[in-house]
Length: 328
Image (cartoon, rainbow, N blue to C red; front, side, top):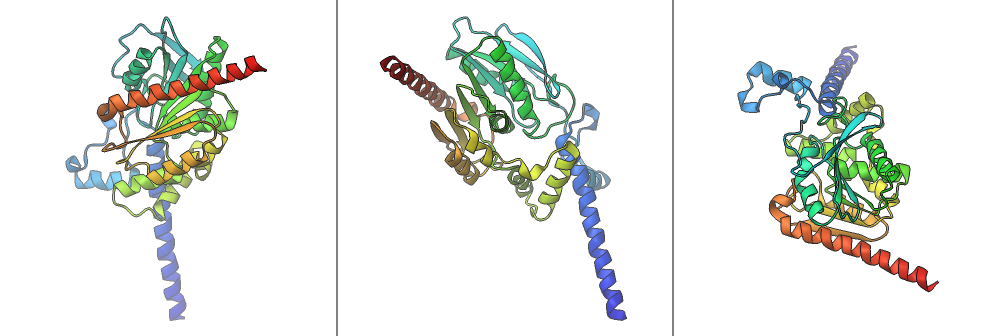
């Protein structure tokens, strides 16, 4: 009888811990995928938190402020509002002698103003650009982010919009979450851009959740899985199926994959697996002494050279195809 009571106590204790872990994960998952629009609610840095505030943050998560556009293009631009699964705002910058349009998609916690420096480089190379605020960011609708899952539908909306304007040379650029949204869109909707440039996409949603735990020196098991489960449930999708490594198998257009060797958010293993699965013309460039950041800060010359060479490869491919057609 004593043994049975002891076992019951142990089961109750373990069950209590399991329930508590799920409650904590539930709140953290929500905060991770929903921004707050009230600046006064922003979580202070750890050293400024009182003991009670630290406990509250541990249980209920960190408040992330909705990203706002902090600067604007130096060139003349047009504001484009598109209705997707959410209403999204874009900036269209037209180049008078455009070779095509490059659509730029930001990463997690970013907005379209963070893409201006790269837009400027593409404009110098002779392209028009379209900078996009994903849902929950900048001037787009809501405060929700799904780390590239539902954002993929917004990639399609923008692509369809440009196609309807008569643009035939559409290229897609994304960084981090933006890259993932592009990859998922191609996988799900079979859109056919002329080429894509993707920076530091994660291998799977589970991988990127684990990376956040690793950066905080916290064990990934079992909380990473529980957090991903609740994050998916709250946002209406199965988080464990959000897998860019698999999406890569559906990508046949020319692809330039860029990565920083010091990246603590995305591993080299994830990048290598994605690169291996990509179909068609592909190129991988690794930047030394560079983390999960804007590659123009430390690698502007090399980044531009990589991009220019990529476009030349596409032009060469197109010229060869025209030549083959003429011969036939």
